[in-house]
Length: 433
Image (cartoon, rainbow, N blue to C red; front, side):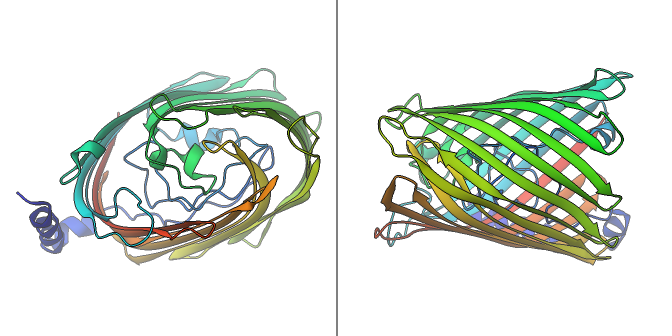
């Protein structure tokens, strides 16, 4: 059966769903990002999120951001506590993709793509903490470009342990085998790399202590590495050591003072960096939340590069309405563009909106833009755009169908733009036990 016929059958099935099945479906939550929270270390703008967890681990549009000095916030205990001990998720996707090889300039190549993935997680809980183990396996099959067929996997863990009544340990570790277009640690820099297999590792740890009800002090570390076992692309890794002080000013606002020392290990040399910034997180009424941060990054002189100063800034906000939400973020930051051997300074913007159409259907749209320059080589300029829009249908409890359209556009210097469009139908099922 051809890919076109499969797409038509899936669309027909959707239109023919009995009304009583739709009426029993759970209300899908709006799509945009959750309310912003203060990051433990400086963060660049995240890539615009897809409307659902990806089939391929780390699959994201290319116009986001990866921090030079930063680590993700530790998992929220309340969110993890709501997960069942076992959680199984299965996704099947049928896609139509133009320019699957991401060739520069005009390209008329297009193909249907079959993909699927399985994710399994196991959560253990104790009186003082919890541990979550998770794994993912996925495959992609191109109808007309069999050399692009691939398989990926991911495994990881994260844990939170209360050491004392005022001290908490948080840690995480992930290992991902994927391709460059499917790894968020690479697409997050906004630079489009050749299609190549990667093996990436991410680890983070933080110890936070509350000397009083309003104050928190923490020390943390993060490590990232990316290897390209089959391609002649530069491997890279980075280590960040940081400290933060947080002060709860009121029930609706808090301040963070954050320092980070980072070492970016490129193939040719090692680039140290020091970052300091002040952040303010707060809410205005029950529906609007925001996070503002400003500071600077200093890159000391090395035997290959002069010393440089670069500003750091982040502005983000989220509005949650009765039937939808709107979120946006802007940042200016310095980060390592893994896979290029460069340290980049960039501006990044992302916007997301979601709207409940009926109790069983939600419409969503996201847009992301990034502009990057090499800190030490102004001739390297890279721009990337990415947007997606679609509708997610709740069919029955745990079962959903998403129809989406995605466009990606990237330009490096004066080279012709790389443009790729795709349309997806994704069937996802989750079961907790």
